[in-house]
Image 1 (cartoon, helix red, strand yellow):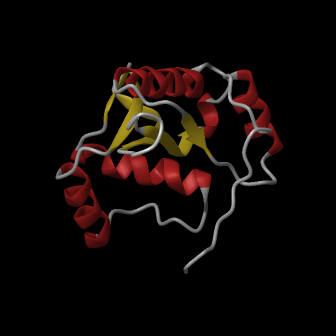
Image 2 (image 1 turned 45 degrees about the vertical axis):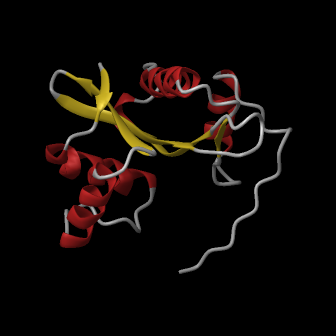
Length: 145
């Protein structure tokens, strides 16, 4: 089942994010609670979770961003895609991405983007199998911290 994350999912979300990057803490802090409260007050970013048997086994963040180009149609951005290590290869990530696409289409977004670390070849192959094209755009980033 794919659903919007709830505040009580924070420990499970942080455990997943820790699997994505060991630098991310696996325990909930006040900073996390403040970020959750900020997310709850806005309508641009949604945190989706995949739940199986009451357990959160995957997640992604979907932002649908207002835009002035493309006839003022928004664009959508996916971040923080992660499936529990023990559950990978079971279609969970694909179902999360399909739901993100459905939500973006429902809001008439003209494109859906995601970025992935440049050394994550297995993830890149997965995204291609899900219909994402890694050849049409070049991503740039500037780390601020």
